[in-house]
Structures are given as C-alpha cells and as structure tokens.
Image (cartoon, rainbow, N blue to C red; front, side):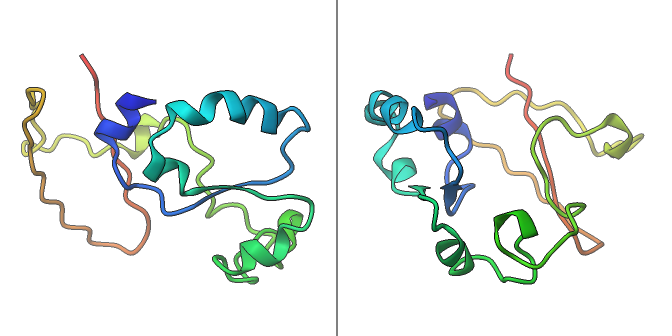
Length: 125
C-alpha cells in the first residue's frame, strides 16, 4: 500500500464500497491501521442504503442502474486493469524511457487533443 501512496498521491477523490460481504468490516479493521490517514479518509463503506450517498457525488444520469441510477452505458466506466497495447501511442520519437531516482521528480507535459480520458502507466524496475 505504501508504494501506491508514494507514487500515486491524490489520484482518488472518493472510494465508495458498496455491497461488501459481511466479513468486510472485520477485514477492514485489520487493514485500516496500515492505510495512510489521508487515503483512509477517502474510503466510505456504504450500507444497503447507498444510493443517496452516491448521488451526492455522481449524477443520476451517469450512475449505473445497478447502483440506483439511470445509466445503462457501461462503456464509459474504466474497471481498471492494463490498457491494451493497441491504445498505446506508437512510433513517437518524443517517447523516451526515463529513470527517476528515489526522492527525485520528473515532469511530463502532455497535450490532450481530444476530449476523453487520459491514462498512463509506470514501470517499476
């Protein structure tokens, strides 16, 4: 968990955990002390009546039906996982490997030319 917190700070505004199994609160009680307090403050375990809480953050038109919203379109949802190679930017001379030493920073300026989502990945060596 520390690696993610160190390398991906503040990427998540809020995480709602819905429909968790009954054992989840017990597991969370053991894991919780190891999670950074700032990260922990962003996690919210919702009970059975989570719809109203979700609607405080997500428009009903965008919220999926299975969570109490009106949307049937799951194509805009990124469920996580690796990005397929066919979506990688190819044959661009500006793309160069960069080694960043621990404690140092490296800035990458990216111009996004179309509306949508922007994804990136890092390779840990």
